Length: 314
Image 1 (spheres, rainbow, N blue to C red):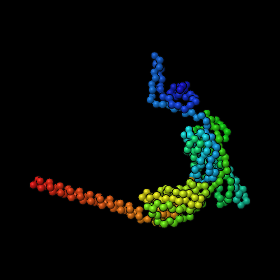
Image 2: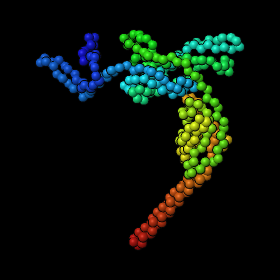
Image 3: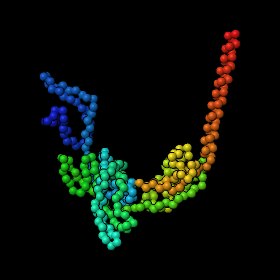
């Protein structure tokens, strides 16, 4: 390292061609030369041989309410510590009552991404600002996806700002906007958790079917099968359920919710059979009986010991 000219305590690192770690030492000039003091710490040089590149992303459909998990495919993602997505919605032209209406470009807040491996990362989309489908019918929407990696912003072209070079590869694609269909209310028979039988939930959410999470009493269920028109799931054991998610129509049943992205629908109520409740009651009853027996035995033992002690004194 070399010392900066303006401040002797600020240092400027030299370029490197490989990542490596070096010990930190302070060199103090003395009359007889120099004195080296080790700080017992290390400094790590990070070298990125190639810049990340974005090749594609999927799904090419977004949930209007937001929360879509977008998988970004590319190269050299692994070294990145804090990748982010910069989503821009292009101008939309729609018609209503024969009149053409233009909606301006929308720049959404920058969203964090998570690196999965060298060639994939995932990003979550924000809630989208779109014209009313009821008023304007169907329309096409184009989106520009830009990505920021450790101070380098990847977008078309390049620029230089505050001595930080920003080189980009962003992609503009036409995206389908999906409004997930409403799921009808379900009525299940009381569930016996000792049988471990899966329950059926009829739903058709297309390419978002695989993202659906089924929660009973606020706890995620284990989904065993996913079909185009339904999912099969195991409800969690009743002992783990949250009482805050009891159904409004019955305090002895729990709400069942389906969630994908920012969509969360209540699709029915589930009641558990008395078997699990009876088992829990039985366990509690046995525990109480054991405590009572131990207490009684302790009292009798104390009485006998005290009586013997009094006799010995006499």
